[in-house]
Length: 253
Length: 308
Image (cartoon, rainbow over all chains, first blue to last red):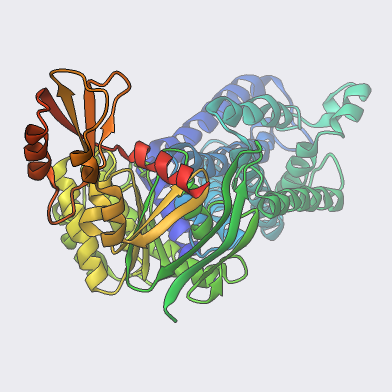
């Protein structure tokens, strides 16, 4: 195991975050605060409690998940796309490092950044609305698994993308709609029956539901099912990354 | 073991069907400087990329210090430093950060004293805190060399290290290469320039259309490549070359107005003075004279036609 290489990649990526602190941390915190203002204060004042929880508090887990998902994907995809774009990927490919170590470095850094961001947003939310975390362990487990899974997804997108448009297209056209339609800002009970059924096909619903359960013990789907879905998604991403490195898809000629 | 790198029957066909390497056999000796000459698209970069692990070989084997580049990739890659042809750098990083990163990536614990020495040797020390994007092209090239040397490799691949750099920097690079060789580093460089091979290489290989068509000690190759021609425009056309001039092996143009003399620049005597006297004695006068040296491309074409 080339731990020095894993550490080098990890520290390199974390240093990039420090260098782009505003973009990496401050900007998501500001946009999340705006969501609180718009959804929590403006709309929330017209919506009564959901499951005994005030609307402002209800949307906190969804907002954290929104940031985690978006940032995991964008951080991880950019971190591997950029070396491909500039050509510095030659060094990674000629280094005595295994695929697993490369992923550990890049995905580990992207997931770490997302988790830190999630915790910062949680703290920020605490300034706006009263919070309770019924199951801190489960809360952190969902946070961790989601950050890792979506960082892996981002890594896959970064490998697949051969231009900036492709790099943006999946987060914009797939991840964002899935998050918004996955119950970030509402309980699916509030939807007409047909839409409730359709929403069950949205994998993000299970993440948000399980995560929200760890806060308030209210959920759209069973927590066991949520966990199973996260693990399934994680497994799919791991399998795809394994295939990428086995075949050299878009990595090696 | 005398050979540090052994390339056996190496072939590489890209997905497009392009055959970049066609059964290359090449042994690289420990401690030597080997220059690989070849025109664009000859397969130089593909050969280097394959040995370094960037491209997968389609067939054949490569061993580095006795280790297979695929099975024992960790061992072989940790022995090799690669300076790519393109100036591919992390634009927003500092020189210090990027070189330190390279050392870690190649599995070595941090060693600021060694990095400092590498940067000083390459005249980069005063730029250590500069962002790479702020450096000149020549400085970026040095950064790439520093990155390649950061993990103390025993083999250094330089892919066209002096393409597009000025004469002064080119000579600096040659000095760096010589110093590295003195320290025991084996160096393989690719180049378009004969004079570069002449200046620093111990052996020279010529690669063309994915095949090594010639590999030889520099001195022997240079005498083969060092042919020059002198062309005389005759004042009056002649029908044939007089027998007294036979020993010079002259060529007469079809219209009888030009004589071409081919000679060896490396030879002790070029024979030019004798030829000019002999021409005068034979009553052949000329009104212009010029000399040409075969370009590398011409030499390749000759070598390829000889090989086939």
